[in-house]
Length: 516
Image 1 (cartoon, rainbow, N blue to C red):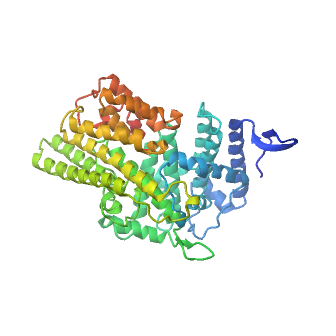
Image 2 (spheres, rainbow, N blue to C red):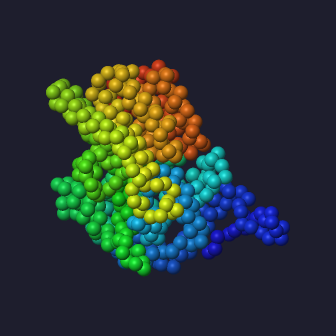
Image 3 (cartoon, rainbow, N blue to C red):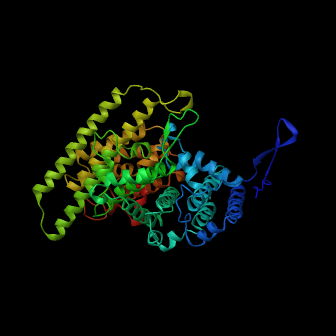
């Protein structure tokens, strides 16, 4: 069916006899879009009985390989909503995301959506949500509830868990598994960014399980996670070439989607570990897949999605490992002080050296050869490189703060800690641009804020004041609310466990304030 456009009605100021299509009521419009999306999908899916039967019991495509499946084109209303997702949803949810135009840009999202009903539903429902928010950020609960309800329709995996999906055999359904993992991470990010945190942990659990199962299809297993990851990437190919020249190789949509979703999943897994006395759940995969500091070609590049380079996140994972080891030693009543000092010193020296290199890098970055003419890009490669270095510095300072807490070097007001707090505040307030990128730095923002001294807190408030409307930065707002509570408590933590960041949380679900 065609989308009902009767809610569009406004006179053209240059010609009183002609009508133009502009919305009278954006919230009414978004509701119509959602209803039209549902009707569009129902009509087209009913044309394919096999797919319709699958949708009744599963969240994904039929079991045959999606490379050979016939893509279902978008209807008119779905095209509108998908466009809003690409144009407004992606920058909102992933402000540091830089899709490589030579690698096909964001086309992988639309391609995957045409091959997977759950991902399609997620994208068009989120797109209609952002469509409805263009007019106002106030009172968006109804929009959110409508979008989430429709995103979850028919998604058995959300109610019965990933075992239902995996038990049918993932070896021959690899693209389908990747599509589903991508859809789940999109839902997780949307829920966190819109301050609906209750389901975020369950989304992460499902995505972790699928990720492990996908890598488990490779013969290398945990003995060589990097080789397993690369083997899966190969199986998700081949890519294509830009026509007519056929000279630029382009990753397949499944390859691009799997890399993107893996970055989000591992990133969240690492940061979530900082508020637990456990190692990151995916730790066995992290060092191998993310690579070492000087690794020229890691399988995935975090800086292109979350702004921070891989190596700093590996060190945060190592600090969480150290904290988990220390916690187990305390429980056993045996603490190896020499081993603790050795590990703390090794991590600290590595981070401090890397931070020194980052500061030099900003001063020496020179404009390189652009990938394409500057008229097609919003930032030069030089600006992108500088901002990546600055964002990574923020994370490096936060990692050193986290290490100091775990090592129990001194109290929150100690000089070493306050140096890092001051640097984080200065970078966020003065250097990071545009300020929307702060959305990806809720964890450093939170750590620095909780440890900041009174004379520095005005800068934190000023930084938050630049993020308007604040309810569009849900995780930053929640982190700031927690910081304000800590400040009102005189900077003291609720209990005496100095190294446990979770002591600053009033609700364990709020860990998601650090993730986006």
